[in-house]
Image (cartoon, rainbow, N blue to C red; front, top):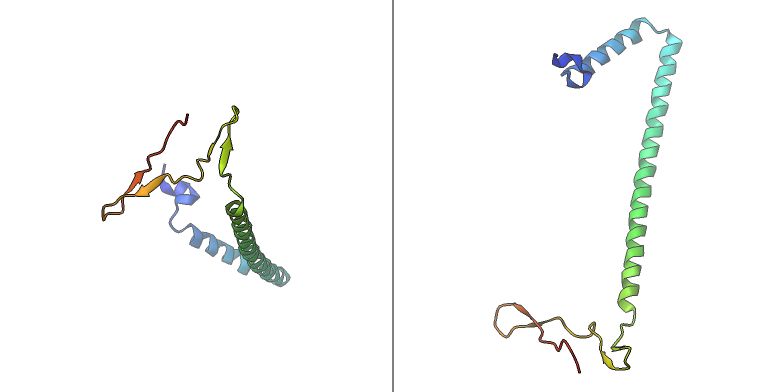
Length: 123
């Protein structure tokens, strides 16, 4: 099977098709047909340009709108009051895990974070 049997693999397929269309355009069409094709090509180009501009504008608008909505959501979660104590079923209250730091800075000069020693079980 040669590579010319598939149109995708042809090296000069675009030039061949353009030359064939140009021959038909010159010899097989009447003047009114040529004028109709030129006006249709102009209309298509105009519609494609307008559609591209509208699509890009809509995409940018929606991207900023989504970004603004996400920022408002994150601000709402950040501003939400966090619990300071947890009340267990037996009536005992304990400090919320959200209030305790998970890591503390070591005393060495390097920026190393070590786990904070915490009481796992309170009696």
